[in-house]
Length: 115
Length: 112
Image (cartoon, rainbow over all chains, first blue to last red; front, side, top):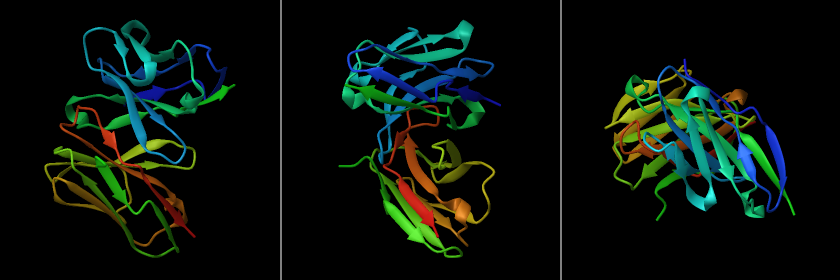
């Protein structure tokens, strides 16, 4: 069965610092990969996705992610964090095919931004 | 115009009651989903419908019954509510199952 691991439960960075949130997945083929963000009391907003092609994908709010097949990873990055980026971030995998759209989520990473 | 809307946003009820959560999407998508987010923020799929047909039914108690009257709506009815049902329930939709899923704002259910 597919699984997604976000090793960091909580990350704290200073405003203006760079950010990398880690995501590893376990699946035999290349799945469809997503990063979502959830602000307190809100739903999930898509930051970016990877289906195929260029392994470096750009998303909204200045985020990017890099798919590395050899490491089964899809890490999220941002060069300079803003206070408004404080939220919880979820990596998700859709295995495609007979998974019929089932998204498997990681445990989430809470991002705190210090001024 | 909200793309995926859920009602109610909050639901507080007693154990043993029956309640429903409604979901509507105006994106013209064919596939809709229900996810449960527990107190540790872990998200897990419950059901998926494609063109009003059930295609995913994870190991969810049969007290939970989804109903899709048309492609734009997927409601969730819960019978005999238990304390463990307290969670945030998210509805989502996508054009096809492999595509981006758009989420509603969630319904926070508290069972007392």
